[in-house]
Length: 118
Image (cartoon, rainbow, N blue to C red; front, side):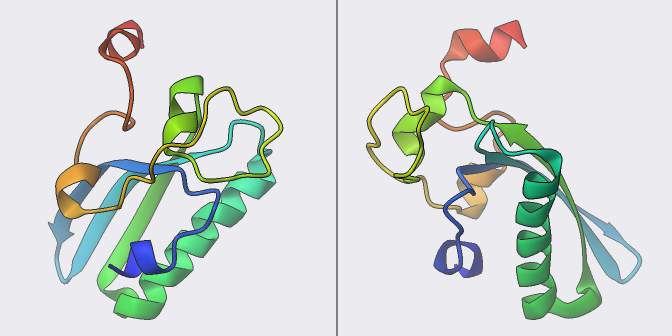
């Protein structure tokens, strides 16, 4: 709920979420899909915003590690960033970040043949 309520327009997809308890701390690892054209600094700002949101809500109970993925053409259908000059497909629906769907180890809306090639 916190992620969905505070979702930023560059947070296209969240997937491959893993949580490991390490002492009193929960180590959280995930992949965040952002627009492919963001530079490293811009992508890092998106990670910082996500980390700040988690830290504000849960304090030091969580340690967050985020890997950024650049979007691919199949991501356009689930991306609601309207000021995108490189959009290849029409936006259809935003995928909510739920515990059930963020645990998947692939980008949402990804064709099966793409996952096999990577």
